[in-house]
Image (tube, rainbow, N blue to C red; front, side):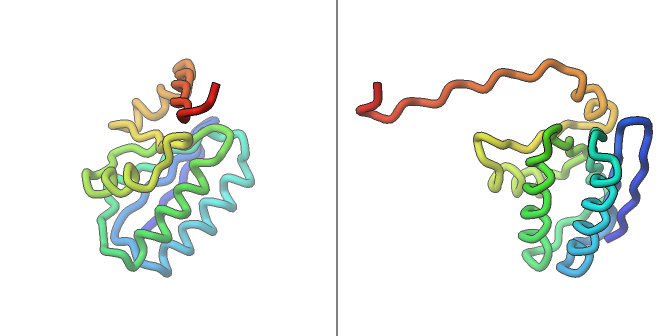
Amino acid sequence: MILRAKQDGNVLLFELEGHLDFETTQQFEGTCTAMIERAPDSRVIFNLEKLRFVGSSGINQFIKIMKTFNGLDTKPRLCYVSSEFEKMFRAYQTTRNPFEIVESEVLARASFDLPVQPKKPGRKKSGQA
């Protein structure tokens, strides 16, 4: 996997290309973590347009890493997500912390300035008042 990172104002853009495997996923985590720590107030976008799905050798680790980044104060945006990756993200996300998937980099940038949608109240379990 090839990782390109660019800082553009307050946006930190990561472009991923190639195939996932265990070793490159670990390098991806280290590089992204270091860059985000240097610019903690950045709006992070992961462009997955050129990333290819490759079985379980790297995907589980990749999803785990993306869930960690998804816990940032300002949630990162994922753009140009293939249908295979979108299915994986949807399967592993939680209702309290869903991934922010948008169609394009332009929409990803714009989405940071949209008002935050209020969370829908959860259903009460039977027997609760």
